[in-house]
Image 1 (cartoon, rainbow, N blue to C red):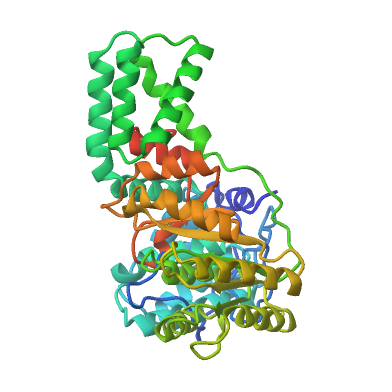
Image 2: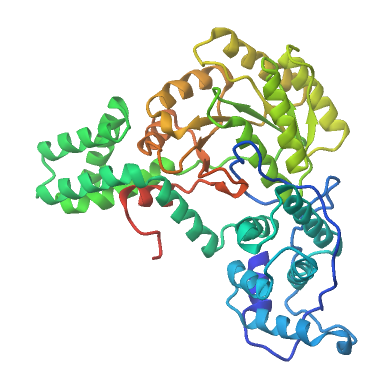
Length: 479
């Protein structure tokens, strides 16, 4: 039984004859991800394990029934009332958190006690409860946040990751709203023109397809991707015997969902998993690394970040600051060192220190520089010789505001570094949303995450169906 199903079984009913374990006051704290220069953007969750580096709670499998403690007289009236309210509440993280935070205005002992209570009620091990509370309290101190409204969103995000609830309906709804906001500018023009096109045409004739092609080009798909998408839609229309323009919207929605559908792949690796991060300067690569490291830490993994961009001293210093903020190990050499040597040493150290995930940063000079591409190829070769299968993933970070330039970046980096997946950043109001379609369609690469803002929680898993619906101005699935 999955964790969320188990949680529903515990809290799903209005049973008042059983009482969950009481809360125990928790103090202390552990370092964790925070904000910084342009506070960074924030995937499948791995099982709980005692993490060497301040691991965060992974909820263990929850028993069907949580027995009352032997001495129920030890349970305070407040704890018992909280337990009953949680059991009777709708089984959603946002609802549970709302109950736990009632009467809590700022960070303090009451907040730590309530958080520990919630995590223990979900059967998280005591050491993981302690780690989570310690971690979050240290982050609040670094950020100098005091009031609940300043940190509630980050707290819910951390709990969703730690408890494997990111796919919960409430979390997906928040993500859909964020994506819709990010695509608002593209959608204002694209969706409105689509509506006009569908209304002005009756049949799916040549004139309709020509106008649709022009519309795609104006939405930053580019010339060749626009031609390809129109041909795919024509073929789908023939296959499904669709002849009327008003039916074309559903055709387009279905086609976009198919374009964005990520292929299945083997995710198992021989630890440490080595992730090569690539992209030009200015796309948000450094903060994206921090956010990915933050996610991995929240999933109980031991993380290391290696600064193989040795061309800029500032890049090394900035990455070190982020590594400290997210509680990750950091490996670097002085500016000007050989990048491949840094990567080699980082893998060696990661193996010796039991690291789960190693993120290797690389230089981001203009993609047209031949020597940079040769350096990336060299790093890949060195990694593969040092650790079998490495790099296990090469992630290209693209700035969603660059439009068609993202296509040329993808082509060149794919040839030099063997790109496995894409992350789109800066999708927060000024993005040229159509480029995601073009990149996914032309290069057949999955988009795994999108950056929707500067906070840690703003790096979220990409959902093709939701993206397509947000781009076309459609409601989220199930609404």
